[in-house]
Length: 394
Image (cartoon, helix red, strand yellow):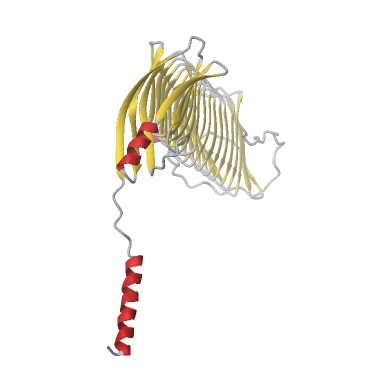
């Protein structure tokens, strides 16, 4: 055989070998193993708080009148081979143990915690029937959460997934980093710190305090005050008995049918407010880059102090209007001026409109169609009222 031919054959063998080493072997498909389970847990007589610590999976907690806990659910594992999947599934447990402070803790044990079994995915989904008199302290990393029919306080610390809470007789506190939040019927107060999702709140007996970023917020029927701090969170607030304190950045605010004072700061957004009744408290509004539309029944007693920088003022009520440089100013009184209406707007329009009826609705909130009269030439301002509203800091 000629040397040249031998060299070519040798090169061909090397190329085939290199190709073979770089071609991936067909991997076997992952194995999924899932098992149902049921567990009954006795509650010690001194237990006041049920603590739930969970890693991944959906958790639904329902209160009942029995003195023990019933745990029903499924546990699932995805692994590379059947033996590993089976061992990992068997290692997953929800264990119960007593802690100081009259607490009974339910905790996840399994792959990724106390076990050395390596798996690709794992989760535990369960329904937990608990004595309704227990307070709940929940810490869930990932998964949907549902809580209902609890006669005590509830605290939820959550990272990723939707949360729904309803029929809570005590106080409710929710912290969530990502997911939609739905709350229905809280007898006492509600505190929330949430982001990245929509928020829907219906029927809170006492005060509501909420801090929310990135997502629409709807609040209806609160028996006490509402304190709202938002960022990129358009909010609709209706049927509020107590004071409204709002600080919102980059989001519109609409307030309908409220009975107490209004104190609002908005940066890049529009305020629309209609109490739906005769004015009985003070309104303070400060808007940076946005509009204000206030609807006020003409039977109200009010003292107006309206100032707009780089914008316009429109009022259905008679009040003097003048300009001071780039600032438009309007002041006036209805009846004996018992309640203050103060608006300070930078780069926007203020519209003070008469309510067409008692009981405001969102459909009446459209910008008025008018061409404002030219502002009069600058002149000396009357004796000023020192009523500049402070920025809201709930």
